[in-house]
Length: 314
Image (cartoon, rainbow, N blue to C red):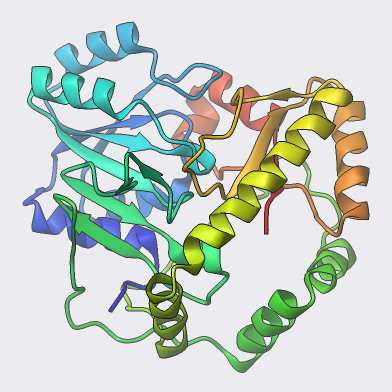
């Protein structure tokens, strides 16, 4: 059985590890507001630390922060499915007596040395619904072991949601048409454009559980990951040709990437890659929905948000 969303899995993982109101957690300042939902629900305190243009921690500044705050844990995000330097995080955690909270919502199926991402931390989460395009599905690991969710109501999708999901999975170009018709290209100048919805505490619906279980049983996850890595390389070549700068020099050979991210230096570059993506039946998008406290206090994070383009790899 799975949680409906990775953020729900994160919440119950924090509860299982004994986090209490007022506990402080170190969180990178390039983060989706969705992860903050359970932190706010549990009255925990986020302490944001800076990341560089490779989306790696600025370790010197992080060292100062951890010494100035009594924190219980640190969040490590495998952005877009690309693994962070796990060993460095583990050394840092050991030196500062921190729990490692591993956010692998973008890279379900990715691995290092045969060990799945999400299983390295004291707590780990994955979001197979993003990889498999199911209606729901989030996995919780505690010390690398999958955790069963507590008794919760099942996720109930509307008939319209089910119809649209089924149609978009069968005809990807239909999703592009629908997005263009209803929204057009996202406004990269408005950080509020990609707001994540609030989700209830639920488990995955029966259909999603079946799809995820089948994918794991028949090893189709690795096949999907291979296809996505090939698409990553294709987009890397396209973006380099028109002068866009990829965040990562290359795709990790065992990753399962969710999207291909690049830096755009101008509106013209954004329009160019947007046109190319549309011809391939894709709509580029900004990520993440930054927490509101960062929108008003962290200009560097906002600037980074507005310059990063994400290209879907479905």
